[in-house]
Length: 341
Image 1 (cartoon, rainbow, N blue to C red):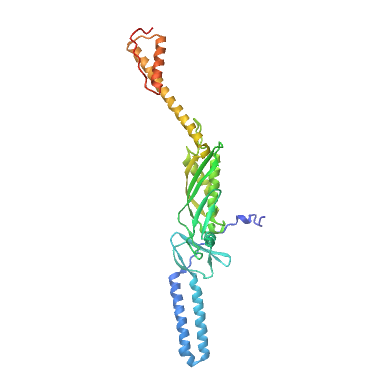
Image 2 (cartoon, rainbow, N blue to C red; image 1 turned 60 degrees about the vertical axis):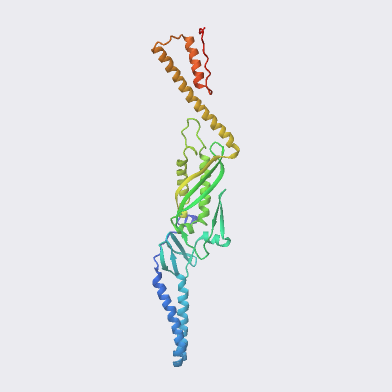
């Protein structure tokens, strides 16, 4: 369903409105003065004014009670905003404004703070964020009356989860996200619970990235891999996650891969494969070095006319040198005191 202007109702985000309220210290002084004045007025009306006129005394008592009740209600409008905190306020179901400057302020006493994460945690004392394998316990140490949204830098530890890479190999991957709330109004109104939302989106991005890249590249390959290009893959994941949480007023500062390994059921086989590849690479280097040394030896012997070798003797010498240079064990010398033939 679309509205007359052609926009979908789901895409109507609440725009942030920064409040510039009155000074809390000045209002606190006036309210205390009103409370003290109302008490003094009621005392005087009962002790002095009642002797002059009972009607005037009753009127003064009524005025004093009204002033006292009004001042008491207005005390609820005093708000303290600490550094890196924001308070999103609503008045009778409508967005009223946001306080994001630290200080002591006075606002309409009938406004209420909104923070879905505190409300969800207030009933049970703690929330468990479960998002496709993520289990991150958030302990709630705030009371229900504290509805402030923290603007501090926070960390989301996405525990390791099992997923198949591009080649179908089961792997375990875990990430950590450094984030903060940049727009408290969007975080409160545009999503149900911005912490749950971030957790689930992070899990989805991690799984999607693991499916797009292999764990490791093949021999001679230059494509991206989770193991060889972890920093580059993490940067791509960070950009994708930032696009997903933009409407929630969240800014992703950094995202890194903290755990990457083959799943236990194939870890042993993959380790043997890596060991075999390492042995082959080592043997290749040994053979290349042995061939160059044999070539150098023959060249030196020929240049200095130390010995004149025919093709058969050269072949025997090459064979012996390669056995000595490429063998795993030390060669056992054999002394030939007779003829070569």
